[in-house]
Amino acid sequence: MKERAYVYILRVCGRGARRVPHCFNRLGCVMLRQPVVAGTFYPKDRGRLTAMLDGYLVGEQTIAGAVAAVCPHAGYEYSGAAAGALYAAVEVPGSVVILGPNHRGVGAAYGIFESGSWRTPLGDVAIDEELAREVKKRAAFVKGDATSHAYEHSIEVQVPFLQRRRSEVKIVPICIGEHDYGRLVELGAAIGAAVKELGRQALIVASSDMTHYESAESAGRKDRMAIERMLAMDEEGLWRTVERHGITMCGVAPAVAAIAAARALGASEGKLVKYMTSGDVTGDNSEVVGYASIAFTKETE
Image (tube, rainbow, N blue to C red; front, side):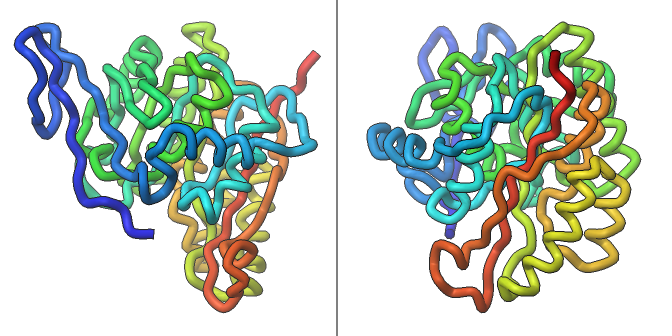
């Protein structure tokens, strides 16, 4: 699906609002990110969006102890069933760290949206600013940056699902534009340590689709290899498998960081919630995109 090529962030100060590329918290300034793919990736009408989300937030699974997840980010008509099955199965806590790949290649290599809020047709979602600061403190290469989020859809499409499951949820969006395995593991460890330091009940979500534009047979074969490594919580094995087999998993970097964070938070296994391809929706299996939703869980009492 084609996404809109525009975005603006409102600068809301004492003398009213005006459009600027971005602004940081100075002199009472508040950052508000406007949705950029409402009306394309998902409905911009609140009622239609709510009905669509409710149709996807179904499933028989209940997964206890989830601390992290991998979730797809295509248009809802294609991957909404996989995303909805995940969010229906796990508990959505008060804070969610969303790691997304930087498809546009703009902004910081590790850009964190550190203050203000994000708007969707369902309303505004506040940034967990305390958690964002703690992550930055523990990973110096993470930079406060709105530009990396300006046109990016991979994080935005997660937010309405989270809102529908927990209306008062807070988020920490981090857009990743670098493939440095060591730093990704360091980022995951920093997120895990930050969550523990603050005593947060938090979920880390890695936004990723799987194989792109291959036959359903080829995509399924390749995706099974990557999914196997994720279920084993083997981030290094995932990294090597994706590279060795040419798997076009756009969010492998967020997934590596999420698995490292999950381990830091006590997770011991991954659970596959749903796997599907775009061909399951369109009926055309000659060239598909794969979608997997996976939860990483720790033992619960």
